[in-house]
Picture 1 (cartoon, rainbow, N blue to C red):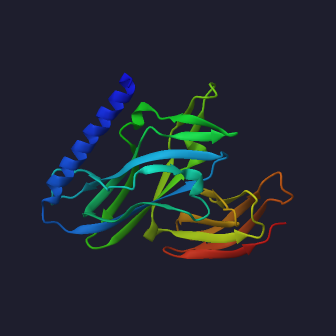
Picture 2: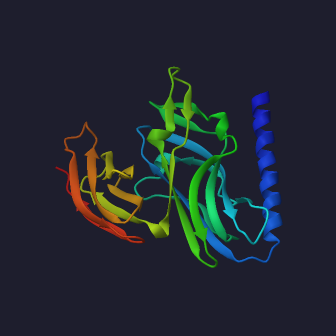
Picture 3: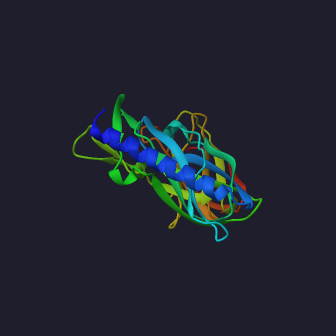
Length: 267
C-alpha cells in the first residue's frame, strides 16, 4: 500500500470517528426529529459509463438547543453507482427516511471513495479526485428542518460538467458539480418521445436553471428539481438520426407536482 492510499484511509477513519462521536453526543439530548431522504440522479454526459463510489452522505445541522454543532452521518447506501443509469426518471435512494435533529441544514456533504472510473470507447479509465475533495464534496443548502416533517433532498449530478479532461489522455479528473433542491419546494416535467432507442437530450430552457437529461431506452424522460414557473424544453435527438431539434413551449411547473407533456412526436 503506497503512502497516498494510507493517508486517505487514515483521513476517512478520522472523519468517521469525528462524525460518530458528534452524532452520539447530540443524540443523547431529548430533542425533536425530522425525517430525511436523499435521492441522486444524473444530468447527462456523452460517455458510455461513469462509475462513482459513494461512501456516505453527511448533514451539517445547526440547532441552538444542542451543542456542539456537528456533521451527522446519514448512513447512506454505500456503493459504486453508474451515474448514466440514473436518467429517464431513474433515481438512487441514498438515504431513506432517516430521523435527524431539527435545526437549520447548512450543508450536505457527499463523501466519495477512490473507486471512480469512466468508460470511453470501450476503455475503462480511472477518475482522479482533487485532494480538496478527500473529506467530501460540500453542497450548500440552508434549509430549516421542522419537527416531525419529511424532507427529501434531490442531488442532481451534472456529469458533463464534472468530468475534466487533461492533455494526458488517461488522466481524467472527477470534479463533481452537483445541484441540490428540496423535493417539496420544486416540481418536475415528465414526458416521452415517440421514437425509442434514440439518444435524445431533453433540456430546460432557462436563464437561471441548468437542467438536462437523456431519455431512457423507451423514450421516457423526467426533469426534476425545477422551481415553479413557465418553461420551454429543448428536444435534441442524436445528430446521426434523421430527426430534427425542436422546442416545446408553455410548460407550467408547480411546487410538489409533476407536469406531463404526453408523447412528443419527433419530426
